[in-house]
Length: 322
Image (cartoon, rainbow, N blue to C red):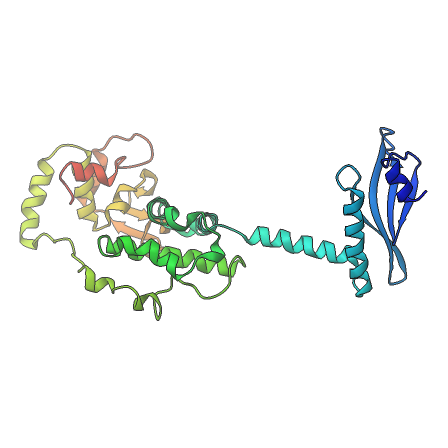
């Protein structure tokens, strides 16, 4: 039965088999082996490399006879040009899936970058700084854009509003954009040069940070005043005062002292061992404890493993650090 006849009958044939329309186009009628329901779909028959092949063109419920003939004509032309229509279609679908996979947004790439590198960062503070700069300065401008589309103009649009007023922050934002774009390129999500690189590129478009804002180091206490300060500090009650005194006696950084654990203290040997992950040099550091430092530790309550269960903010609020 020809499809001309089937179209007259509104294609309601129920006879299983392949019903030809001509030019390799068939209406395939079959029964669902599980439910017994009749299934009708369009197929295109051709021979390639000596093999008979059947290419599905869609269900009768979704594709009209006219559309099926158009699809069959396109497949027939492709086959006439020496291509396998099925292989060509699968290749096109694979390319589309790959393109969709590569259409990562900057925010998605940034999230992946952070997940990849955060294990190597020394503290949660660094992670928080990354997330904060992304949230406040980067995401509102380029976060939702495909990473492949990020260009110099978009990087400049992100940096210029904060480059003069928040120079140090802006420099870090630029470095983080550059790092994420480098990661995206290495991962195959973008191609081309990095529009956020500084040397030989953005340095020609933005003023150098050292010319905008001079670095101001925190003032150091004169050595001659340290003794009087320690005397005053010892007279102060509270955990924050003891934490600062311990920090001074051990000549360590505040984050190292505030992160101290009881399990790191060897009272018998008079040594505090700071693990590598909490030191700037990423190496284990053994600190000899002076008698006063041991006295401070012995006088502290033990509530959990942290020696000083407070943050640097608490010391600042107590007026002990600036």
